[in-house]
Length: 203
Ligand SMILES: Nc1ncnc2c1ncn2[C@@H]1O[C@H](COP(=O)(O)OP(=O)(O)O)[C@@H](O)[C@H]1O
Ligand SMILES: Nc1ccn([C@@H]2O[C@H](COP(=O)(O)OP(=O)(O)O)[C@@H](O)[C@H]2O)c(=O)n1
Image (cartoon, rainbow, N blue to C red; front, side):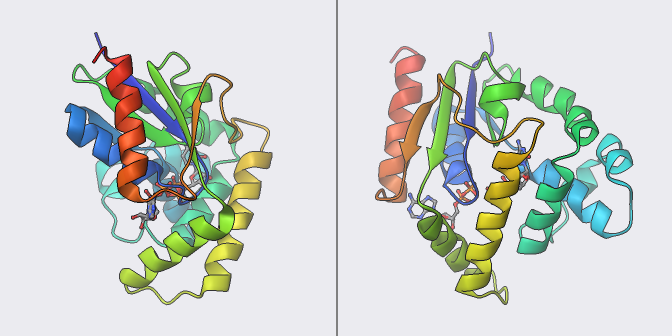
């Protein structure tokens, strides 16, 4: 029987960091669903039509090295409002969630739409200025030419688009545990999530 951990939250809240740690700790597979939308957004920026790109996404698209930057993030949130794009990515995410060894999926609509029956549901958040500062430091460390103001503006614009869209908006599922990492370091945030999953797995 599969075991699914569903994690949602706004940009740079720490979803990926927590998801990777849980997957390593419990031997589960991890899917960063944001990468799917980033890959579709990158193909649209290259001139393709969004729905066709979502329907023909390949492993090579997901392996592109330009998906982590702000341009792909912004393109992702623009294609993510299109219902047919979301629908095209649904089956892949649901079948991933059924991995026999268990799966952690992180994104915006995992608890609410993709895996509403997940054994563990988590909503990871933090104050926007703190998230923007973390993302700024991450992008600078990757050698990207960004400013604090620019990153904060991008994060706020993306949050507004993700929370305001009609189809699968970002919202904390009523039955999700909310983890506000504003005043938590990575270790503390990961420990809280590990504790939650360990309890749900029965030890
Ligand atoms: N609790 C935390 N305290 C400080 N930095 C964090 C914390 N959680 C994540 N980070 C850092 O913030 C950045 C964004 O985290 P990430 O896990 O990629 O967020 P998300 O997947 O929600 O976009 C990364 O550089 C990560 O190392
Ligand atoms: N399940 C998901 C995952 C991402 N997305 C979209 O994809 C964008 C990029 O997601 P991401 O998870 O890579 O972004 P970060 O939180 O890492 O900044 C988001 O801003 C959303 O618009 C979505 O709509 N649904």
